[in-house]
Image (cartoon, rainbow, N blue to C red; front, side, top):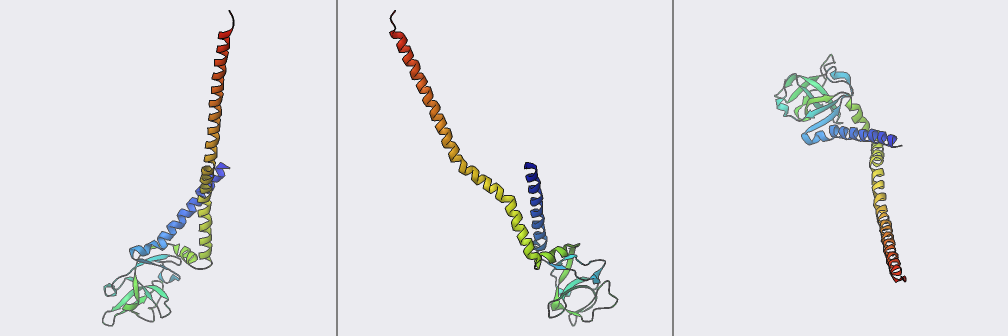
Length: 205
């Protein structure tokens, strides 16, 4: 039973740590100025494959040059795309883009105002995890599993500690009674020895 408990603690703790790491990679990146986006098409293969998670850093659009990969808003529906810049029209503030795996340029240029940033690095296939945990029902499943695991890891120890605290006063009281009884027995024994000695002294010679 103890071995099974140890195995369960190791597995559940490892899963909690994994979830925390995922949260750091997905959410913590915002604290240092990155935004995460999931690659959903093969248009940028082989550099970025479907399911890859890219970390995008905001830059000055005027600093973008031909050959840079940019992440941008495609349309008014806030669809996001990531393609390579093939031409720059600085005068009209337009960037012309094309997917590495595509044969032709994108139909519409990207205005400077629609540039989100430049991808700095990516983590292969983490986009699948990101998509799962950020959208129902995966979001609810992840939250539920996380709560269950946290309770499974910490609740038994909390209950055991509480039980031990509750038992301590009773154990202390019982020990006090035992000590008091032992002291009383020693006192009675000493009294009997004293009485016996007095009786021996009173015997006629």
